[in-house]
Structures are given as C-alpha cells and as structure tokens.
Image 1 (tube, rainbow, N blue to C red):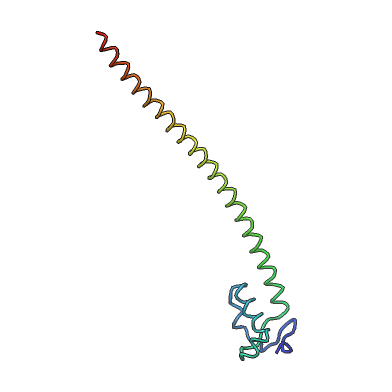
Image 2: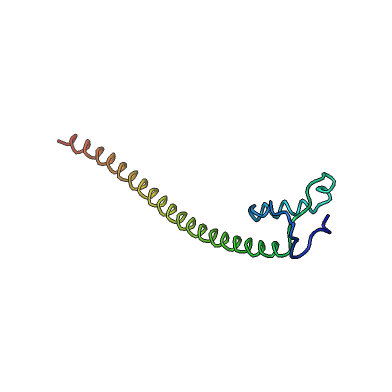
Length: 119
C-alpha cells in the first residue's frame, strides 16, 4: 500500500483529494495509511512528501492566524466584561441611591404629617 508513495509523486498520481481542506485531506490520507483502511478495502493514500510539506506550511499559518484571532477576541471580551462590571456597579449604586431617596421621602412624609398635626 504505502510502497506506492514517494516524495515527489508519480505522473499517474490520483489528485482527486487535492482540492479538499487541509485538515480533511490529512485525515483522509492518514486513514488510508491505516491497517483498518486496508482491511476495509479503502483506496490507497495519494499524498507526496511535497504535498505534506506544503500543507504543513498552510496549517501552521492557519494556526498562527487563529491564535491571533483568539487573543484579539479574548482582549475584546475582557474589555466587554470590564464594561459590564462597571455598568453593573453603576446600576447597583443607582438602585441603592433610589432606595435611600424613597426612604427619605417616606420619612419626610411622616415629618409632614407630624408638622400638620401641630397646627
């Protein structure tokens, strides 16, 4: 099975899988190298060393880009969390002040009743 593979490939090399996404391509090619695939009569692997090297470069670039995206997203998320915490603190402070104002109004109404009763 793997005896048919070589670094540069052959002229009659099956290129049907070459259009696939890097991760899917690698998964299929690796499966085709397995004993399980051989026992199930799956097609033989069709990769070359050059293809693997090219795809390693592509996947490394994708990994680096994704890591940068994640770092950026994490920073943005942290900023939103800080803003949400600040907003939550402001809301709680406003609610506390409102309760104080409402209590003061009740006390003032009580004092108003006392004042009117003295007339």
